[in-house]
Structure formats: structure tokens, C-alpha cells
Length: 569
Image 1: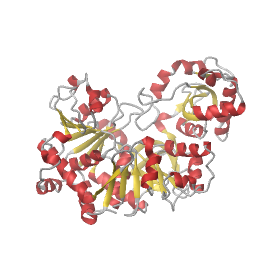
Image 2: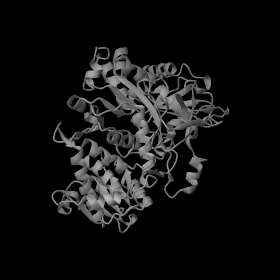
Image 3: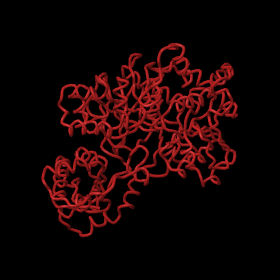
Image 4: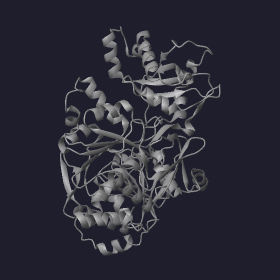
């Protein structure tokens, strides 16, 4: 399937040789503008960055941390770290200072790059917790002075960054010593069920998954992919960054999440990776504007050339997938984990089945245990967890990666996800309930933005619901419900009746024990900042239950409370 001797750097060098003068990358430049870069120009900048790392004495196997939003330097540093044989530790820029410090300490980094002074300011007050020999580089001026550790600004480093010639041979000599089995990166899992663990992925893991993903799709030099998912997540890193290099297509970095649609108009991309939340927002926007069924409107909104959208990170609602397909834009989903580099299965334009996450990609095996857990084996499976041999032994058993997800393979080999093994709710009647499955059903309602099912050890299920306020207000106006305040929107009997109908409709095809008996409408969204969501927007259930303990207790205040007892919080 792929050359066993390939590394990420050999992949990059082969691409530069094959497509040296071709346009490779579109980087935001000024308001709404983009600067084009060729493969050769990117190679020159990668070598400059690698020379800076070498001058900072970064040696093979040294860990180099990056805390940054998506930007050109993110790509350069990732490739440069591999040129010198280092290990790139990409930390989510959305994390708080203590969380970032914990991961820096855990991986034993000797050099850290942060994007801005604002990011560096997160570490103020945590100097004593950081390694004493840690050095810092900030991409953008001004130079912050928030820690006792050395801080330099990239443009102020030796003139090598802009003008000094770089002798590439010593750098390439180092790169050629890298073996496919060498550690390439450490990525910390989002910690849904516990503290974050550093996932160790090798060059072979990442290259094999890149090649297999590319083999499943027909990407070519004429494609332009718009990239906006955080590159610190393995989904974007493999499926945007490394697939771009292997395919030789063009990649464009979006200005921001808020400007995705604007950037589509400017760049006219042909492909895009995203998460269900984005695609559902596009659907809701067209529906609410009355343009959903206007011929060609969805394609026009996405720039006019979009031929394929991929969804990952969470379950894609069938309703959203159908909405895109019926309007001429293919929207398909895949499945994977950080620990699997990440792709395990993927739907393709020629092999697609609604409600599934596709078939295993080439070279990847998928099995189902007697307990219904999905397991996978192949070159994509991680090396293990950094400094956690016991956790590694629990996760990888006889070469099989235990995903912690529940599902089954249908008669045609398509994988269906039914829930998380570790997130099962066991009711007082001994019934096992997969809350993720029910939550995904509830999120198909245009009036529900977020949902969490509760009921561990209880006789029935309840739900915490975050209303979609704009759509709710439209429904209130339509039904002429007299509302006097924002609080009234969450507690008026007419509003509660609307949500009772929504829940009943969404859950009409599930068993009696999976029905939601009571619910609470929350007055604010669940957020990353409050620790309620992971950086990939998954629910941190224990935190949410603690924050809304009173609301949950109220839903179980009476052993046999009636269904009409819902409330706002």
C-alpha cells in the first residue's frame, strides 16, 4: 500500500521534487486576501525554521511544543521539527494556562513556540511549575515578559529567518536518518473520561494513514481544500495537512471559523473537512432564510465548486447529510481516534450508506468484541501513551486497539456507531443506555443546540438541554406565546410544551427505557472555558453534572414525578 521506508519528511521532499513550482498553499494576507506559496518556497521556509531549531540545539527525539492557532508558521514548525528528528507536541491553543503547563511538563519539552503574546500571557504565575531549562519563541511581537524563562520573537532571531543563507545538506542528512518507526508526535487526548494522556504516533502511523485515506478518495492537483479545523487535532493534521502533501493539491488556511463562508466565496474550494456542528449550522441558516430549496443556493454558498465535504469528530445527523446530498453537495462521514492516526473507516462518494461511518480504509482491520466494542488493528495504531505503560496495555491488547466505542458491522461491511462503552448509563432497573446515541437524536431538532442525558442509577432518564435561542424565539413568535423575559423563555408552559413535543418526536423510534422523562432548559451554553466541553467539543459529563447538580436533583426530586414537571435553569 505504501513504501515502508517513508517518513513525513520523505513524503514532503518527494512532493517538492514533483511539484516544485506549482501553487501549494494559500495563506491569509490582509483583510480577506490570500498570499500564494509554491512548494519550493515552503521548502525554503521549512529549512530556515529547521536551522533555527538546530541553533537551539534541538536533537533527535527532543520534544518541541507548539501552542498556536492555525497559521503558516504552524505548518513550517511541524515539518521543521521532523527535519531535525524531533518530536512535535501540538497543544490545543484553546486550553487554559495550567492545562498547557501540565502537558509541557508531562512531555519534558525543551523548546516551546507560542503564537502570540496573548498566548504566552497564559503562563504568568506558573513559572515555578515549568522546566527550568525550557526556552520559548513567540511568533508575533511584542516580546512578552511573563515568565522567568527566555522568550524570543521569531522575526528577531538570527537573520537566518529572513536573509541568511541556509546550507540544507546537514539538515537533510539528519532527516535521512529518521526511520518510519521513530516517534513523530505526541498529541494529548481530550480527556472525556479522565486526565489527558499523550498519544505517541510514529512516522509510519501517520504516513500509512495518510496514504490509505488518500487511496479511499480521489484527490488531485486540481483540488483546493479549505482548512479550518485546528491543526493541533489529528483529524485536521492527517486529513488536511498530510493528505495535502501526499496528493499535491492546493491547501488554503481559513482566516477564522467566523469567515469560512466568506473564504469559500473568495477561494472557491473543491473539498473541505469539518465537524457536524458546522454543516448543521449551514443547513439551519438556509432553512431559516427561506433559501434551502433555491436551486444551487447551497453550492453557491460554498463557493460554487465544492464537490466533497467530509465530516468527523462526532456523529453526523442523517437529516444534515440528506440535506447536502439532495442539493448536489456530497457530505460523508468517517470514524477514527487520535490513537489510530486517526482514520479507521470512511464513507466515500462511491460507497456511502446513511447512518454509517463507512467501511475500513485500506490496510485497516476492524472487529467487534463479544461486548460490542469496536476494535482495530493495523499500521495506524499508536505506539502507546507517553510514560503510561499500564494505560497502553489496557488500550492495546494483542495488537488490537480498544476504541471504547460500541457498534457493529452491517451485512455490507459498513460500520455503525451506537455509543461509548465508558459512557453507558446503567439505570436502577439494570438497563444499559448509550447516552451519545440518544443525544445525537435530540440534536436533530432545530430547537436544541446541546444535550446531555443523565440517569445513572435512576429509574428513568432526564436531559439537560441548551435551546437554540434564535430558532426558539421564532417558534415563540409563530405560536404567539406571551414572553416577558429571557428567563420566561425557559420556563413558560407553552415553551416547555414545545420541547416536550420535540423530545417525543426525536425519540419516537427508541425503546421505552430510552425515553427522556424529564428535562431542564439551560440558560447558557456548555463551554470549553468552563471545562464542560473538551477541545473537540465532546461532553465532560462529570463536570457538567457538578455544575448543574441542583437542576439534575430537581428532576429526580419525586420518585414518580409526572412528565410535565420540566423547568428552566
